[in-house]
Image (cartoon, rainbow over all chains, first blue to last red):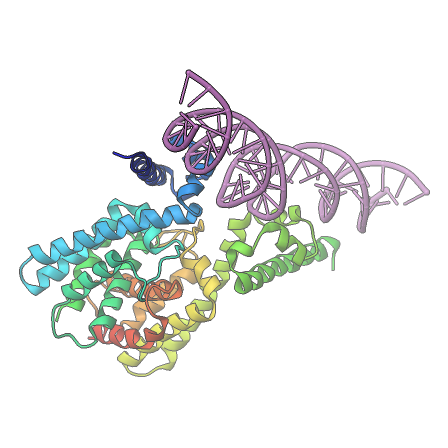
Length: 188
Length: 188
DNA sequence: GCAGGGAACCTAGCGATGCTAGAATTGGGC
DNA sequence: GCCCAATTCTAGCATCGCTAGGTTCCCTGC
C-alpha cells in the first residue's frame, strides 16, 4: 500500500470517527450538546481538525443526515418487498418510517427538521433521499392519480406525526391509533 | 391614577414593545437574528431589562407563540362559523391553517417547531391552544369515530405540509394540490 | 544518515451569544 | 432638600463556532 493511500485511509477512518462521535453524543444529550470542542475531545484531536473534514458544524450534521437517508431508504424498500397485499405494504412502510424516527430521533432531526444545505426535490437531490421518497410512492400502489402529490401528502402526515409526537404536542402513546387511521384514509 | 398603577401600565407597554420588536425582527431576519442585545437596542433599553419581563430568550419566544395561538384560534373559529356544507367547512379551516402558517412563518415556528415550555394536550394547555385544536375537531364534523385521533392526524398532515414546504423539502408551489387531496381524504 | 520541505496539527484568540452581579441613577415620600 | 427603594445600566462571565499563525512530524532526495 502506498503512503498516500494509507494517509487517505486514515483520513477516511477519522471521518467516520467524527460522524460516529457526533451521532453518539447527539443521541445521548441532543444536538445542542454537540459542540466542536466536545467533539474534538471525543476523537482526541483539536478543534481545527474537524474543519479539515467538514465546512463546519452544520456540515457534520448534514453528513449524519446523509447516512440516515441511506438507512431509511433501505428500510422502506425492505418493507415494500416483503409485505403482501396493497394495504399491508402501505401499512408496513408507514410503520417502518415511524419506527425509524422513533429509534433514531436525533438522526431524523438532522434529516428533516434542522436546516441542512441538502437539496430536496431537485436535480441535486441525493440518490438515497430520492430512493426513500420513491419507496413512499411505490407503497401507495400503481395507477394513482397525481402519485407525487399523494406521496407528498402521505409524507407530510408521517412527518407531522413524528415531530408533533417527539415534541410532546400530540400524545406519543396514541401513535398506533393514528397509524391505523392514516392507512385507512390512504388506502383505496 | 395612582403611581403604582401608572408604573404597572408602563411596564405592560414595554412588555408589548418587546414582543412586537421580537416578532418584527424575527420576521425580517429569522429567530437567530433575535439576540438579546439587538432586542434591547430596538426598545432603547439595556439587556437586563428584558430579564425583568421574561426569564430569557426562550420565554420571549413562548410569549410570541401564545399570541399566535390566540390569533390562529380566532381565525379557525371564524372559518368554522362562516362556511356552509361539511366539505367546505373542512376545506376552509385547513386553508386558513395553511394561510396562517404562510403569512406568519416565524410565529408559526415559535408555536409549533421550536422548543417552548408550553404544555400541549394536558391540564395546563393554554385555552387558546385548546380552542384552536377544538376548531379542527369541529371542522371534521359530528359523529366521527375517534374524533380526537382523527383531528391529531389532520393536524399532523397540515403541520407536515407547512414545515416541509417552508424548508423547501416539498415544493411550496403544489400546496394547493395537496390541500385538495387532503380534504378529499378526510371528508366522508 | 541527514538536511530540506511540505503536510498535518495545535495553541491561542476573535467576535458573538445568553445571562447576571453589582454599581449607578432615578424618583417618590417625608 | 434629603433619604431610601426601586429601577436601570455598565461590565463581565462562560461558552459558542470558527480561524490565523506558529510548531511539529514525517516523507523525500541526496
